[in-house]
Length: 159
Image (cartoon, rainbow, N blue to C red; front, side):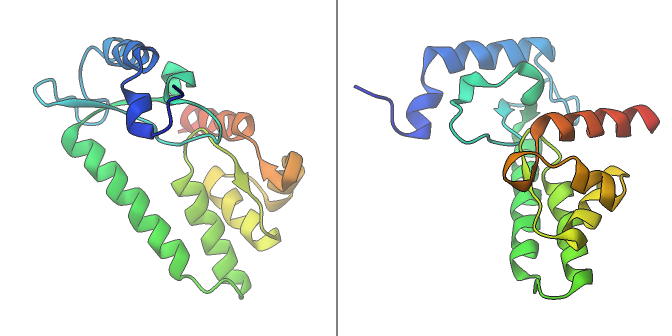
């Protein structure tokens, strides 16, 4: 019988092994607040279409306490609702939408580039020019996971 639901996938021994690996790598503490006394969750900051929960690398997952995990989902839901409310016909709104999308996508998945103003907003978040963002797009006019990961590392290195 094939595993179908996400909940069933989380019961899979491969996920349980990956979960323990992530928790152990983080000394069974929340990566955000450092709590060692709370229930811990292994959080997928981003999902890649077609991947099962255990198919992510440990550095693509986070060890979060219950409170920080809920806060993370709240922030993502809030940003998503803001993006859905923005009227996307003006250039400044597209730039804002690009910035917020990049902020929301500070994780391992691709960002579809809608237009130049949107790319400019993505560039503002990652400290890149609109041209650098547009030149970096891959198949289907998306910024690929590898590019986003490299830019995130550069941001952290440059403070």
